[in-house]
View 1 (cartoon, one colour):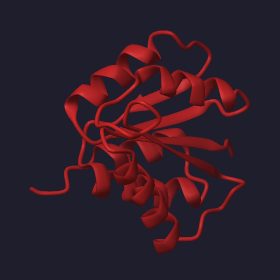
View 2: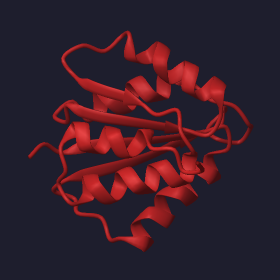
View 3: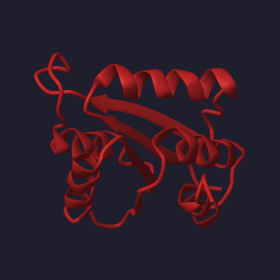
View 4: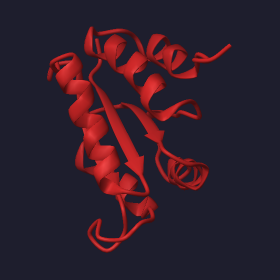
Length: 130
């Protein structure tokens, strides 16, 4: 079983941080299986926007974790995350394109329980509305 790193990125830091808080209140985090980092905003989170290099810094600061999932609020944050993944090697990285809250929650439940990379990835891809 490999520990997973969830990176939540939003143009508004408080949104990413609130999602992190929501996840851990809905289901207490199992620190052996998952770590969650909330990122967002520019100028230390005081203004709206994203700083893709924060993603790289979060990955490098957690170099012992090789399975990484990135969830973002809007398309430009997703594009920034995808660009950063090209700078990282020797890691399994999945950048989600689904619903920020719903898909992140579904994936979190599985990752928290110790699911495999592919199981968590599949939960990240499921369509919430049919």
